Amino acid sequence: MSENSAPNPAPGGSSCSAVVGMQWGDEGKGKIVDLIAPQHDAVARYNGGANAGHSVVVKGERFSLHLIPSGILYPSKLAIIGNGVVLDPDKLQQEIDGLRSRGVDTSGLIVSSRAHVVMPYHKAEDAAREDSLKKERLSRDGEQSSVVSEIGTTRRGIGPAYAEKVQRSGAVRVCDLLDPETLREKISIAIATKRASLVDQPGVAATLDVAGVTDWALHAGENLRPMVQDTTYLLNNLVRAGKKVLFESANGTLLDVDHGTYPFVTGSSCSVGGIGPGTGVPVQRVGRVTGVMKAYSTRVGAGPMPTELTGDGEDGKIGDRIRTRGREFGTTTGRPRRVGWLDLVAVKYSAMINGTTGLALTMLDVLAGFDTVRVCTKYEFAGKQTDRFLPDSASLSAARPIYTDFPGFSEDVSAARSRGELPPRARAYIEFIEQTVGVPVDIVSVGPDRAQTITS
Ligand code: GDP
Ligand code: IMO
Ligand code: MG
Image (cartoon, rainbow, N blue to C red):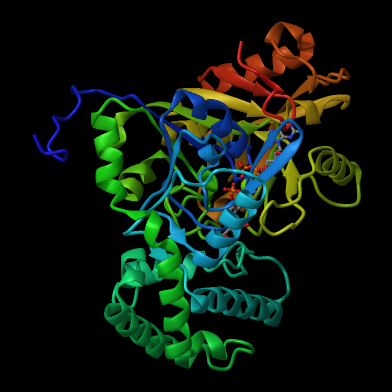
């Protein structure tokens, strides 16, 4: 029998798992992937690009991963970058070099031949578009608007790279980097269509030079060549052979291009639904979906966030305290993250979109020391109360949170290793989340380190 004609697993065979973000990103997905990777044979990224920043802390040593799956720290695991990722070859190389210099074996890293490439002009386009949106906003009234405003992207070229993929003609895939003639033709087409809109932007001339960009891309292709494979067959053959694959999402469900707070979203499908298009593995092979959520909310960039703690008053001070305690500054861009109370309307919506089977609650330690901890369980919108999330940004901007208040806990919980060791008020908080969302909390994280975790 050919290696590609192995029988499909029994109907309903669902030995794979997924880790997805339930909020606006940075929920601690990297930590949770690292934690459950040992139960799997391979970890695969299926969406996003170097906009992601996933942190893993092992015995005090911090690793920040952007494109490489967080399972890379286990030398025996395959770490697969699927076709749904938009790949920045320079960032990937920097990441590989950084890991190798710290003694991490990266030989298990495999890149899909069909992943799309983030080209230098995509980053120029991302920046130019953000700058012109900002200029447009300032020329109106300067206020952040729920309709026209810069998105606050990471400027990593993500949106333009996905747009080029959908536009098709000039899009460059990893396989094209290994084929000089096709590559030169595609780059010429892409640059010809962009020149008019980019030519006035400062510092972009080099990104519009066909020969220079082609040389850069060919060099990137030679570096990538040993890692490039058809990951669709690779992953499906692993699954058919009974191996377990863990799918690692980038970004968060509320940033999903379809289900998030559009237009303040990223360019990809961050929810479980992205696994099919982003890897070629049927989503019904995924039996376990771990939804990672913080014990509060954060968001980077523009867009509505009903529970945001901001301003000069008491709310702003609480927000600053959570930001400082949680070190809420972006892993990718270093930007301070916007901070707010936990929004369970949003989390419940994300659980519905993802079919979440278990929750991983992170940052519980950060909430210690507050007199009162608030949880949003409903919104007031258009004169009525609702427990429905409002993914339309204009509607969500107009929603007011309705809170349930909990007495806070003062104890440091970072040394707890079982639920029983948590203070009763922290346990009550967790139980309330389970009841409201209707999904069990399987994992509680009480600090960044791999060891600071409760699984029982
Ligand atoms: P990701 O993008 O979802 O992987 O999350 P990030 O790595 O961008 O952001 C999460 C941050 O919180 C990182 O700095 C983690 O090291 C840290 N972290 C994860 N879990 C915990 C936790 O339970 N408590 C604290 N204090 N920090 C945590
Ligand atoms: P991880 O995987 C938090 C946000 C950006 C911006 C919007 C669009 O670390 O959770 P983009 O550059 O993707 O076009 O930006 O999405 N964003 C994230 N916020 N964590 C992320 O990834 C994010 N990836 C994108 O801040 O608001
Ligand atoms: Mg992050």
